[in-house]
Image (cartoon, rainbow, N blue to C red; front, side):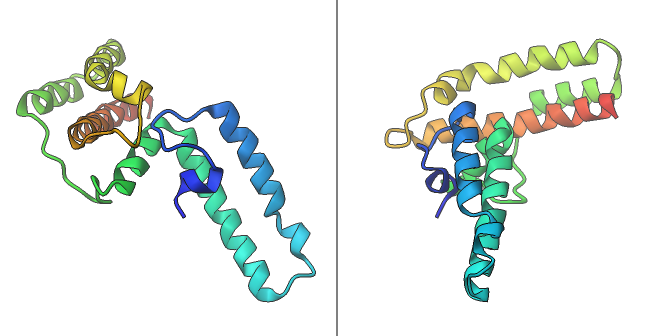
Length: 159
């Protein structure tokens, strides 16, 4: 069972946060271990596993980047420790930003995020699992990896 099935939501890049929370609390209540204190050990273990799965799925769906990663993994377009080749121009720009961290770096990163988001804006907003193409998934994958690079710089600024 994938996380979308668990939450009974359509496969999408943009998750309806209100619906997600509503489903999470409903499922959390139905799988809460307190309701299974009289159940046998096997059923209690199953409930604990479902609760852990539910919490993991909820954490992923609350994070847009983690949701993209999960979707790409589900579609077998991304492996856990994959090294994705990005364009040398992008890597050079990121390296230069990384070397000269300053107060304005966050603004530059924000502008770069807008630039890398443009090619996937429609894919994310109008994702249709039945009609998504490999090319669209590859664009989403490139966006995911570029965003990861930019996030590392932001983490250095904040850290």
